[in-house]
Length: 432
Ligand SMILES: [Zn+2]
Image (cartoon, rainbow, N blue to C red; front, side, top):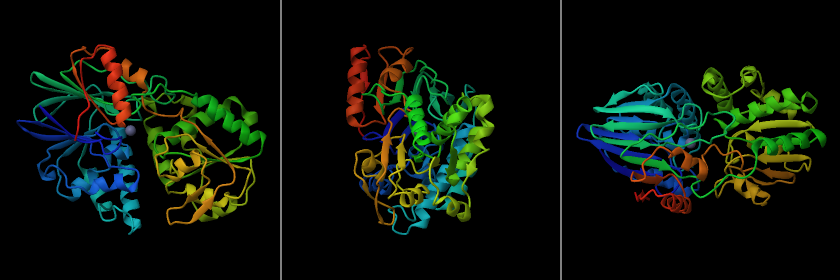
């Protein structure tokens, strides 16, 4: 087996690793670079392989930074199979379709024409779903999925090729996530390729406490609470936690509105596969039984509403999407509160708000001055922190070759230092 690191070596997006044996070539993940323009432009660099010569893609999970380049590959000739779990296939479909839609609708978008909806249709036709712990053959190699605990359907991938073997962690989840079961420990292998997003951090904060404080504030002070959420995974977690709190404390309940077509689609998929999650049984129907804003008339009816009111909308970094109309509508209202329970990338309006800069710009350049309160929380990450990454390696021999990807350089360095301290001797930060 020969491994070539292509994407997510210098940062946390654009995940893609090439794996070759004598029978052919496969990709582990095929993700889009996301973030500021100089990062997005990396998507336009020539691919270091001919897509027609790629025999298969193994997709660890649906997030755009792991799946978002697949329609581009089909556009330029890839016709191999794409292996993943069933929930990943369904979530990847809505994520890729949304991505194509964003590229299509704005002719000034850096990736306008990069791929379009018909490319997503072709990509979707190539998916082949596999179950956890059920080995399958790709190019004579035995491939097995195990849960990585990151989002619904997310896996780590164990590959055995004769005497050689490798594990690709995918994105790893946390040990105490309310929605996902903890990641299954890494099996023994000759080579391990692992993510390092929070390789240098031990998580602080408590998502339950921070969310409940926010909900109580909205009720007690009759405020309008606007929650900026990623449409997939984060929104379903927020909805579940909020419903749980309102079930336990009906006296705190206020109207909760959901606005985001992709969020609504993802809700259906989370409900369909809720047996694979830790979602309490009695709350599963709540994912579909929601106050959803679908039509302009419904939107118009809430524009002048006073609190208490909760709105969950996307995008999670306020970089576009339905949330803009709420930010714009309540920008001058000091009784409105923005809640940012997620990672905010540099250069996004969410990041600006989180560091106290109230002057932000909409996608089309409209300036907005946010007058109300801003509440951030870093407790909601769906990534393993340093301790949890260590725990994942429990069964791994100290001599194993461990490559660190999918992390800022400082995170990888910190994780490498920690691994060396613990006796893992062969820890490598690869270059692409
Ligand atoms: Zn992810």
